Length: 304
Image (cartoon, rainbow, N blue to C red; front, side, top):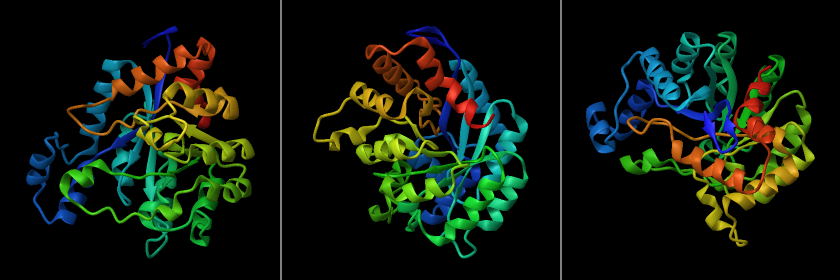
């Protein structure tokens, strides 16, 4: 892809796979038809076959010159959609599944099946969404499963959690911010040094705490995804350039993962996020080698 440093490979560490089952789950929660959900959103709803949505994403990534992407199943129990996508395009997708340790069986069976498929490379934890602590004993079985399969990452959402699609549909988001602090991950990351932990959005408002965590735990990575609107909460009036400077100073260029937080069609891949982030990185003077690491190489190395 063309970048300010010239042509560089680009991979995306954060793409939501809004499958047919994802929209069906939301329609059930709203007690509405799938067509009415589509009308309310003004989005293209995918076909029932996840392989068709996967093909649409491949076409979209090709159009922008993105070589690989981490696909996130965005409701618990939807791992089969991502598995089918990754199975169809194994050289282009890394499959991530959302897990809920607070579920009746702790989601152990789903994780076992997902990992056994060979196409799930990341477990996504949303403690505030599902109201549990990342230190909860119920996570041990899930993390043990991840630790037993080399190069399986644990994606842990911290900080502010706002799900735009739920707002659009008028669905409640009964999240609990008590479980959002990256510091809570410190003891867990130390206990599982063989697992790479990824904290998205620079900690989403807990930037200082996310940097402290990275400084203390070399197996913690930050993904850069979304508009990072959490910056408006920071009293030092951060902009993206300042965020990247501080993250590079603490975590270094090898533990930052570019992500777009893309999710739905017709918007497709969110090139505006890529443009804003590469502009900020170029303006602070990083080298082409550092840019290549953040934009592509680091994500590949997670799984190699």
